[in-house]
Image (tube, rainbow, N blue to C red; front, side):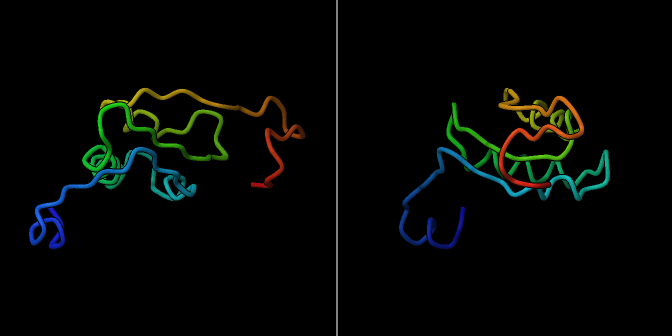
Length: 90
């Protein structure tokens, strides 16, 4: 619990987290990703959502989210080298 939670007794959670593509910077298989994902699990209620964006078609760290109990569902995967899935260049 945070110092605020200890002092006030108030527990708070997020329902949805939106991440920058920071996970792409971890080395594949890095233990830090499990630590990061476990923090997300800790602050999200059951049914909570984590959304992220990756340049990879199948990011290696999807497995870390699955190990933590998340269901990983891609919302869009690019189909070719010149076909964007949105208006953001990565």
